[in-house]
Length: 390
Image (cartoon, rainbow, N blue to C red; front, top):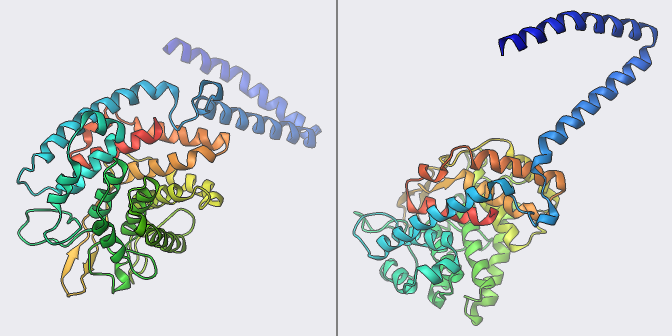
């Protein structure tokens, strides 16, 4: 190897001075021609580099491989999905037994159901899911808190409630009329939801996360015919108000703040933005049609790893004056990938290649990305993401 490098070095010492000397003479005699040759060569090198850099990621239509994942990674993801599925099934059994720890049982169980998908749930997780969620509800309410069995009574939580409703609707379990009505009642008149119940008076509590996840659950209920017929008009009106609020509160193309009406604003949230893009595309793929390229740029500008989380840490003031902390953890890689997967079908050939390259470089940054996930809810969302690209 050292001899080879020495040889290259010596050849360069002999040839390069002569080449530069000839180029200088040619430039002095024929400057326009020299400039044209140099510019053409630069363009050819640029195009060639671009082609060789992205060509391996282009989808091959006749192989039926028009997904955000390359064929070379299919086996890896297949094995990954089996490992995650086995983990989720085991965790579902533990949660269903209703142990007395303080984890967010209902929310985690909903994450697991969504991650497994209706086919696996129907064949491998034959349980009375409605009864499980019903006994996890807050006493006297038709909703779910984030945590259970804590030292104080937790208020109902829009995130937990919406995940439960979406999980039931997706798996052929119809939520009761009272469960849906509770969610509709918590929405503000202009379309947003707060994170906690009975806190929609103060517009500073307008939560992008809560609005997006509530919209997702309602849209799922409508699509799966899991909302009672006499509530469908109300559900559709609620979804339209939520969509309008989300569309009017973006921070440019494809970026959203967690709490857009706070006096002190933070940077847009990658995870929340991914969730919003995913949900809006679920509702209508045309909503963000003009912003697709901006979305790709936004979600691919940074390489993420599976452990990247976001927490707003904002305080939510209830109508009765009590305060609760927004401690919801959001997985950046999961939701940005879900957003990209939703955008993928309508992208140009080159944009699809860019997106596939980004997903490969992030998802396969470590040999076993699921080993870095510590909780069932994380693995449930991760499994839901894997389904979107496989």
